[in-house]
Image (tube, rainbow, N blue to C red; front, side):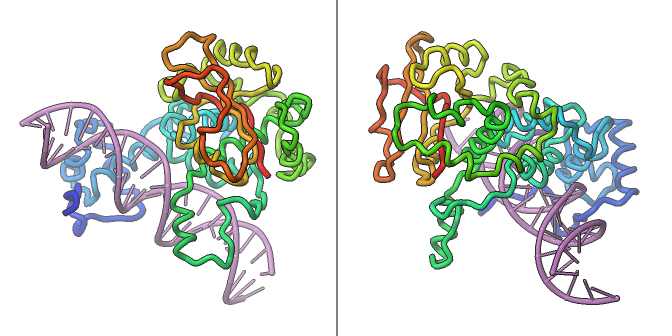
Length: 321
DNA sequence: AAAAGTCCCAACCGCCCAAGG
DNA sequence: TCCTTGGGCGGTTGGGACTTT
């Protein structure tokens, strides 16, 4: 037996709101407030709507100072930065953009911004996100339902932006790469998108400003696993004897997301930072490996400062085949 | 001109969580 | 401690608007 519905579905109107309904809801809330009970509110007003529907209508459309459309470049940058850091936490992202709703940002990201930044690239055949034509439907469904595309998408986004902002950065400079002879980072950048095409999609402002520099990450640190403050980022970078100073660090990846990446056969190289949870800052290790398709376990990692209680804070480099 | 395809976004669905009894 | 309830959230969908063929 499932959970009881929040309202009588049979006697509730669905679909677009009429101007009359909008006016009723707006007038009531402006006069009396929500009363802390959305479920009871439609009955008080005489609206044949679900309480949740009223809440959504008010929050996303009727409440004062809502902005619709016309996202600025600065807002684009903030959305990108936060998406890279925390993924699809739309309510948190919306909290950083006054007048914007989580629904608006979610729609904007899914329909426009993602395409603008990532472009429309053909996924490689080896990518587990692609489904061969000859596999049966059951397996296709299984694959789709077991994917967490967020982590991969965030890495792709970060790499794309990084290569645009600094052509000499880690991702485009093989001399900065760790000693992995077959690392195909340069190939991945070139294959992913023609650089001229990409540059045409990005405005001059976007070329000048780092997408990671325009947001106070510490304001949302509670939402990001691990610490992402700038001093730790600096420490981490300085301590790397493998990668040099050009490395950009992507915070906030959790175990499951990193495991997803490790198990993704299109991800041929992955490097993460490992820190001891309760240990001092200087007790950090770097983990680096060339992905071997026969190895899908983290057990084979080379941990420089082994610790029983470790977790993986940052992805610092990756490449796609 | 019409059909087909694509884009866009408002709204819904269902899950999770916290509060309170 | 368990159960119920409402609020909040992210994912998904339906359908109108627009574009392409």
